[in-house]
Image (cartoon, rainbow, N blue to C red; front, side, top):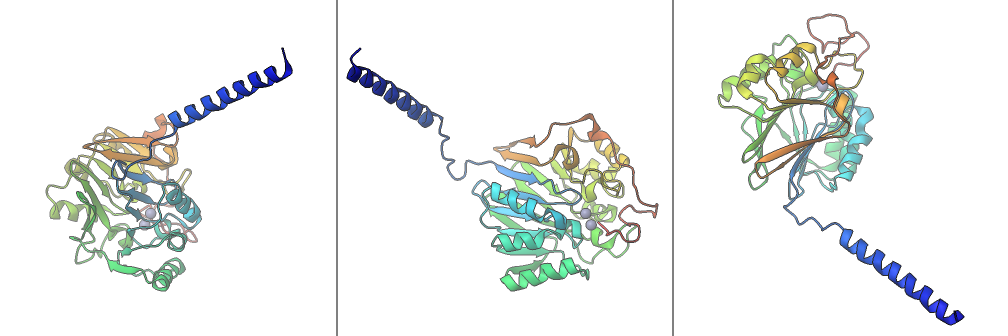
Length: 325
Ligand SMILES: [Zn+2]
Ligand SMILES: [Zn+2]
């Protein structure tokens, strides 16, 4: 073959390969997601022993409920970045325990926040002081939660504040800060999910009294699955299909408790735990929802953890030197 002809053929072959690759790339390129077509998403972040839940509406409005323990600040911030969050419409601190607000300063430093919703409970710790200081420094609007408040994320998607109610709970077998947690109900037409913070049986009793028709398809189980919440009467009223528990692998608090898992098993279709499944994502669209998890499920989902703490009548009461959660 003449050398110039060979070059021509080689050139034609390269053009054909590159052209094919280009056409394949065009064909494979994902369609840009038009605003409004993304499902409503709830991410139960894997923050170890603590809570942090991110809600993103189809139009991209983001709400963060709690920010995990101090060591999870980076995890929460990266999860928000990964989900394309540029601004938080609302940040909720269900109550001032460190496993719920420990990562808050990292979040407030990383994202502009339109409104901060607090339980209004006084808890004199450095973590709380730093959080309040950051809110003040950044000039973030600050609101104390009260049952009856509503936040519309976008048309048809609303977060309802169900608790704390007035007057605050002053007596509990557990912890008053937990019992006065902010409780939220997210509703989207035919879907609803209840966020309970670390609430306790007294909180549940009040919720049953105040909202006789309360129901939710998905329940964020209270207090990491502690045995002193998630009472049978509460579950019978709520009738959740799915339960999610946020708790740390190998935690010494006995979360979740076997009794709580047994009560849930009698009611729910499935249970998801961050200590087993990692991050749990609930996607909601047009009346149906589905769950995705970071790790596969395991038969251990129905196995509780023994408490490594002394018996004080409540597992949230830690041994000396160990922070309350
Ligand atoms: Zn907690
Ligand atoms: Zn707590």
